[in-house]
Image 1: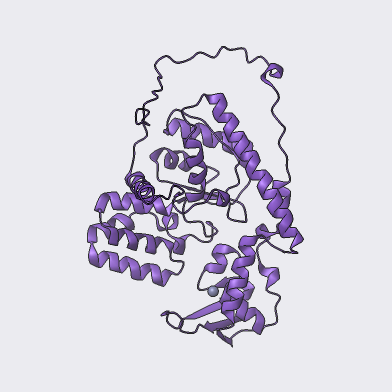
Image 2: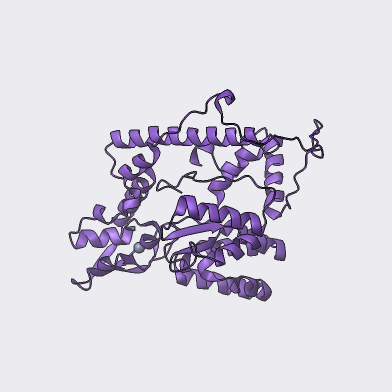
Length: 364
Ligand SMILES: [Zn+2]
């Protein structure tokens, strides 16, 4: 993902099926050609046994070099496949998405009260890997793989095409993303923004919220203070502890997003500290523009390609039927597919053909 919370396409692979060997090959290629020794990498994926096994073999996504985190949507879906209870599934999502430990603990207690086995199921998954409250700031607020699946959704339509066509479509799509983002970056620069849209919106929204808080200074050397929030929209009064010198607030949002939360902004104001200088440099607009200013070479006519020294042979066992419903995928469907199919059917009945799980292509 880039600093504007959009997918930054880095590598693609076409494989027969998701297995341990295919994941091993892909992650080795990624390590060799993309990661190339870079540290502090965070991989977010589903809990496919093949990925987990390869990742543990290290080193890129194993502490202290990097981490592996699970997509919360997949965790909730697997949880629901086991217990088939939407109330519990909702609680699972809430537990995984809360940033504050006290809120996570409260929801887990509720799950335990409702279903002891469901609690035990979640309790045995390493909390660092599926909850925002134990993550330590690696996810940058990204809880799911929804964004990358938006790209998969586009490619899924092309999966029965010849490999060369798949590669061509993937390249065209990637060039399109880079071109659109380069234009977006230029516009943000013209607006005199310091950071990308995502960071600007979050910073301003927390700045407006900070006005409502009251602050009590504690230690000048640590630039620490306690901040009391006002009761609003049914939410209670909370107290948060901010230590500017350590770049931390007990709400944990500063740590997660790299942008001073409303509490931190209030304390910065109280100590006369420039709050803009505390925003992480990965939101820097120049970095965004540098990334997307790179260009791709156009692909020449096939007549100019090098001879590959092999012959392409059609596999006669693959037959594509023109009848609807005949070209079924061999992928094992899970609870999320059924939900998606149901949502699509309902949308079609209502005449809304644009449904994509609340994801627009521009957000990808
Ligand atoms: Zn805070």
